[in-house]
Amino acid sequence: MGHTDKGDGTDSVERHLDLPRIFAERGISRRDFMKFCTAMSAVLALPVTLVPKIAAALEADGRPSIIWLEFQSCTGDTEALLRAANPTVGEIVLDVLSVDYSETIMAAAGHQAEEARMKTLKEQKGKYIAVVEGAIPVKDGGIYCCIAGKSALDIARDVCGNALATITVGTCASYGGIPAAAPNPTGAVGVKEAVPGATVINLPGCPVNTDNLVATVVHFLTFGKLPAVDGKGRPLFAYGKRIHDNCERRPHFDAGQYVEAWGSEAHRSGHCLYKMGCKGPETFHNCPIQRYNEKTNWPVGSGHGCAGCSEPQFWDTMTPFYKRLPNVPGFGVETTADKIGTGLAVATAAAFAAHGVVSAFRRKDEPEREKEE
Image (cartoon, rainbow, N blue to C red; front, top):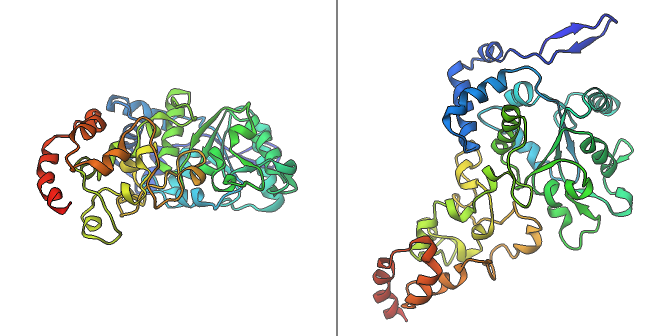
């Protein structure tokens, strides 16, 4: 970023950023930049013909400031940001997001940090984007989380209430998360419940996938509006399909091949984890596609069932984590998990009609299973 003299002896930070020059100085080629724009179009499920528009939006001046607030959380979402790949955290902070305030990663502390937030609030009112990590306690006036003498509730009302838009990162900020689990002693809630009048888009997950955060901002910069959301305030591009729909273990589910014990041959062979408690059939997220750790893996891929962490009240509704769901609304997965391959063709066909399961699976398994029975 460049600096200009305001005439009163102080400097002000320019909003102008010459991305091609900055990337060249850091050894990032134009080809790499366009690859990033193409990757963002894929995350957003946009046609590749819009890649030039995304590139133009990122190279344009006037990117909004970001105020990143930290409340009741484990800081896992910031950790995810710091370990982001493509782009790296340096590219995100300096070139794409323009983070002007974040207690965890900013150099300033104490009064200087608070002054930075107030400066952005005053100068960019109605123009900045608020990013909130962590739940907001509302019980007893919000005294269970205070920063610089102000409650998280008051700070959220001030910052989110005057923001152009608020993005919640992680399930705690979206719906209250673990702090809101029963009996919820601090009265923890998500941002939308704490600040009903704010424009909020939720990116739940433990932690948030940074690709989804960057894609949400890129969508806003490209089209001047937030992406379409579902009934729980989540962007459809990231939460429009169930884990179960894109899971690499799905063929084993369709074939009736389930893990029955940890460390078993079925477990090592990558069979379906549903019977071990996987909540993929009732969880909406793009984890199987975007993945974590530089896109190398995700919980189910590493052999652990989905915990349903992107769903509201998951800590109460999805537990015990190692027991399967008692019932998935509108989906006959429980019946099928018990009966596939046992000769109950009618029940199996009814449960799997929507998924196109081939009857050959049943015919292949029936003789051996009948012997076992």
